[in-house]
Image (cartoon, rainbow, N blue to C red; front, side):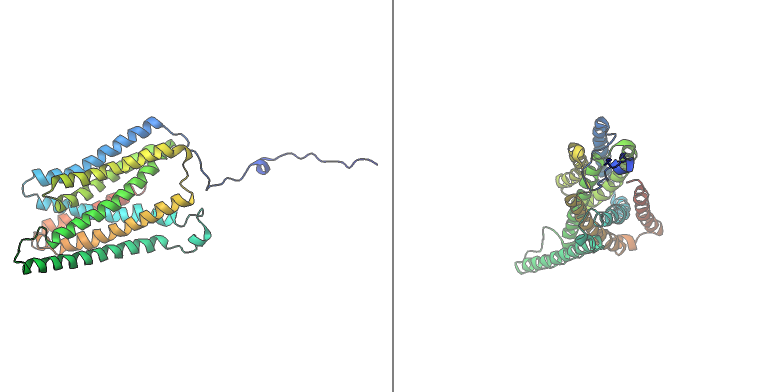
Length: 314
């Protein structure tokens, strides 16, 4: 009985190729360590420059109130663009990534819900602050003490500065990690875009710090420096972990998405409710010339426009 004939099996490329797991760890191609180190110092330098301009203007320019107001409106527009374009949209993508469990992605509005939670929480903190300040004022009046260390407006400005600083610090560390794990041809355009991003954002944060901590130059300097080092810190972390980088694992996606969503909500609330609306209803704006009002409105739109354009690359 003859043996059954056999047909040799030839492995085709399609049959032999293993499916690519997009959720698994992967190395970064075209990684240039020297370029990465240079990028850390570039981002540090432009962040420092952005934060120094409003602080120095506040100290050196006589009658700098109007100048700081223009910086503040420019910053408010920039912060709104950062929140909506650079934070919330990436957070939506992260929290709907296919690498997350289906039980989580079945609800597609996690980013918006978390941003809403942060926004309402910021409003609640301001309500508590207002109530606590009024109680302190009542006690002081009963004790015949009419000089308060800080007015309600001063405390509100400080709370706004702390919330903004925290939100932007988290965002800056996250984008630093992202750039530290980026290689190849994408790196240089990304660094250029982020350099402009950090400079404009530094102007925004520092203009608020200059107003909230005018009489405490050391605290103002510390908060400005905290922003300045945030992105370089993130970039160094990215450099250290780039060989085993996996930005698509569940923990990484959830951590980034949740933090970016919360930070976006804080920025949206503070930019509108704590900066734009109070300024437009203030005597400084309502009693000013039409030219100054136009300048402030234009500065706000310009800040938003610049950060929106930068969002094309970063």
